[in-house]
Amino acid sequence: MLLRQALERYFDFPGLDANWRTEILAGLTTFLTMAYIIFVNPAILSKTGMPIAAVTAATCLCAAFGSILMGFLARYPLALAPGMGLNAYFTYTVCLKMHIPWQTALGAVFLSGVVFLLLTFGGIRQLLVEAIPRELHASVAGGVGLFIAFIGLMESGIIVRDPDTTVALGNLRAPGTALALFGLLLIGVLQILRVRASILIGIAGTLLTGYVFGQVHLASQPFSFKAITSTAFHLDIPGALHTGALEIIFVFLFVDLFDNVGTLVAVTKKAGLITDDAKIPRLSRIFFADATATIAGSLAGTSTVCSYIESSAGVAAGGRTGIPAIVTGLCFFVSMFVAPLVGAIPSSATAPALIIVGALMLGSIAEVNWSEPTVAIPAFLTLVMIPLTYSIANGLGIGITSFALLRLFSGQSSRKDWLLFVLAALFVARFLFLSHH
Image (cartoon, rainbow, N blue to C red; front, side):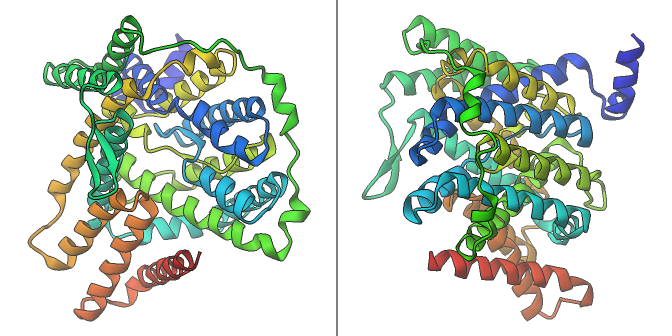
C-alpha cells in the first residue's frame, strides 16, 4: 500500500487525474499498436546479413529498456523502439547501397547516440525544441494524426498504391480489409458509447473475430533470447569513425532528432502535458532516455531507437503518466519469450486503432488561427506535408522554414527569433542534402 502511494505521488496521479486501470490499459493499447516492430524490424535488418533471431531479441530488449527508462525517468507515456525509416536507411542505403558492413553501421548508430547525449547535456536539443513556434504545435499534432491514419488505411488495405493516381480505394471484400472495416466500426461505436478502453477492446474484438474466420495464424518457431549473442557487442566503432561514415552518423542524428521532436510535440500536445507557455517539462530527461536507448540498441544489435508515434494510441486511451510506457516496455520484455504469439496480431486488427487515433488527434487544428496567413500557411504546410512526404521530420522542416521566411519577409521577425532562423537554415541544408542523395 505504501509503495502504491509512493508511486502515485512520483507519477503525479492526483495532478494528472490518473488511475491505475486506465494507465495500464493505455500501456497495453500502445504495445498492441506497435507490436508489429518485433517482426518488421528483423525482417528489414536481416537483409544486411544480420541473423533474424538475434535482431528479434535485440528489438524486444531495446524497446523494453527504452520504454521503461522513459516511463520511470521522464514520467511520460512515450514508448520507444527501433525506428521505422531509420531501419530502412540502415539497411538499404548504408549497408546495401554504400556496401558498409552492418557492424560498422551499428558503430555509426552508437556514435550518433553519444553525440545525442552530449547535445542533451549541453542543452542544445532542448533549445531546438523550444525554438519550434508554438503556433505550429497544433498543426504538428494534426499532421501526425493524418500520418498515422494514412498508415492505418494503407496497412488495412482500405487504401492501396495506384500507378496512375498514386493511391486508390482497395478491395473492400478482401478478408483482411473487411476485418479492418469491422474493427473500425467496432472501435467507433465503443468511442461513441464512451467506453474507456474502447481502443484496446476494439483491437481484442477484431483479433478474436479474425481468429474465428482464420485470419490469425500462430507461428511455430519460438525465438531464443540467447540468439542475441550473434549481434550483441559486434559493432565496429573504429570503422565508423572513418571519413566515409561521418555522413551516415549525420543522417542518423538529424532524422532521429527531428522525428523525435515531432513525435514529442504531437504526443504531449494530445495528452495535455505542454505547459501554458509552450514548454515541455522534464525535456532533458526525455532526451536522455532516448539517447541512452539508442546507445543500448547499437550495443545489442539494432538500428536507432526512438520514441514512437503509436504512443498516441495509449494517450487516446487515457494514458497521462509514465506508467503506460513502463507497461509497454514490460510487454516487449515478455515478447522475447512469446514472440510467435505477438506475431499473430495482424495489421488488420491494429490498423483501425491507428485510423481512430488519427481522427482524434486532428481535433488540435481547431487551435490554429486560420485567419492569420503568417500562421495559417506554415500550419497548413506542416499538416499536409507530414503524411504526403511520409515523414514527421520533413513536415516539421517545411513548416518551420515557411514560418521563418514569412516572418522575415513580412517584417514581423525580431532578434529573439535567431534560433528559429538557425533551425530553418538547418532544415534547408537537410533538404538540399537529401535531394543530393
